[in-house]
Image 1 (cartoon, rainbow, N blue to C red):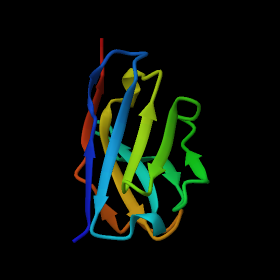
Image 2 (image 1 turned 180 degrees about the vertical axis):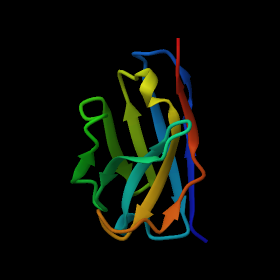
Image 3 (image 1 turned 60 degrees about the vertical axis):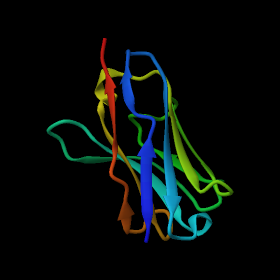
Image 4 (image 1 turned 60 degrees about the horizontal axis):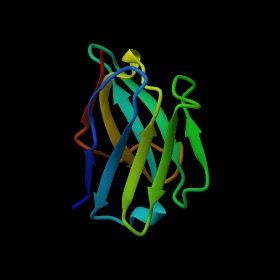
Length: 119
């Protein structure tokens, strides 16, 4: 069955960096678009970034543009999110998700990984 397993979250100081990973299995990873979505404490889901199936096209929310980089390794069935210059407001549970193409409805979610930015 489809599995998306996030890792790499943790506690980091403001200005620091983290790299999240999402290991995918149970489907043909290289044919699906992938996304990162986050949920801050007490708030709703916020889309962070998308990447197309080949990894050549990426999109970012204004709140993370210039600080976060989404990428994928289709040979390793892994999605990444490099997060630099982290801010307190980036604190959230980060989920990876898949969809048949960029902009399509998500059809599977991972379980999430906690990112806490605090001094």
